[in-house]
Image 1 (cartoon, rainbow, N blue to C red):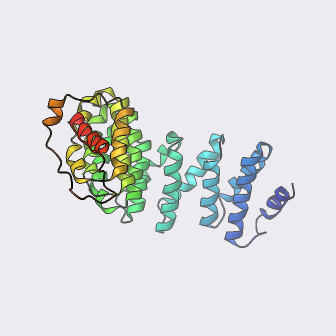
Image 2: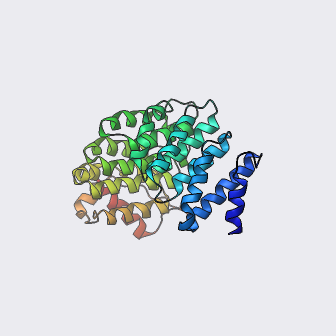
Image 3: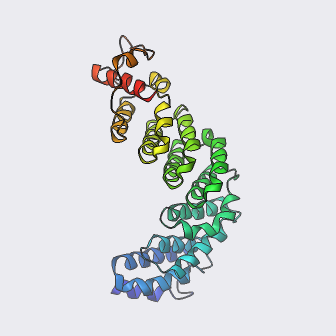
Amino acid sequence: MALVKMVQQYSAAGMVKSPAARLMLVRLAAKLAEEDPGLKKPMLQLLDGWLRDKSELVNIEAAKAICDLPDVPDAEITQAIHVLQLFLTSPRAVTKFAAIRILHNFASFKPDAVRQCNPDIESLISNSNRSIATFAITTLLKTGNESSVDRLMKQISGFMADITDEFKVTIVEAIRTLCLKFPSKQAGMLSFLSGVLRDEGGYEFKRSVVESIFDLIKFVPESREDGKKISFCAFQSRTDNVQLSHTFASSSRTASLTSLPSESCISSVPRVPRPHNPPSTFATSTTEWSWRMRLSALLL
């Protein structure tokens, strides 16, 4: 109760001069609203007032708090989204990044609420800051319609090589969701995923691509035949990552693709030279090597 009174007392206009201190009040109000349903309405009123604070820092934190709270009335959500939309055109890169990141996360739960921002988000695709551009495209993937998918996929392909693995994983996860949302676009998405699988990247990025491909094969029947034809063999012949080999095997079992081909089919696949003295991190066991060869033959 003392904390509630403190927040209400110091939330009055002009009471606290420091933007950082007002930001802490925003976080306290959000925490109180989350922990006590009885305080949700008065705390939401305070958060709504902070949306019109003279500090961008406080505005963004208040909008984020409203978007993160469960079961918020549509009127409150609309106001928070409107504030974030205004910040998308800010001349400051850090402000744009903060706004698009919040919208990106919120679009995973309520894409319809974010769709009104699409015109401003599209203008960020060509932003020189690749972090902002990545969040802009993945947000549009969540909020866009079927007719915009092909255009967005072409734009994504243009800068995949210029971003870090962390953002590559974000894009792949968005595409995975899009695959299930628009099954008719599975051919283009499958082609994109199989292409980036051959690009350079770390284990987490490759794992997300493999799992996305197998999810597409599993949940979109139309993609099953094309998915089985994707040549993982070339990629497998270049990798000795044990973790990734396990990912291939476990994903294929999940997608019900583990019925092994005949020995004649396996023997027709080009053999991958096995190193004579491989390092300990390589997949050297007979079982692991057999899995790799059989999986490659299966997916051809």
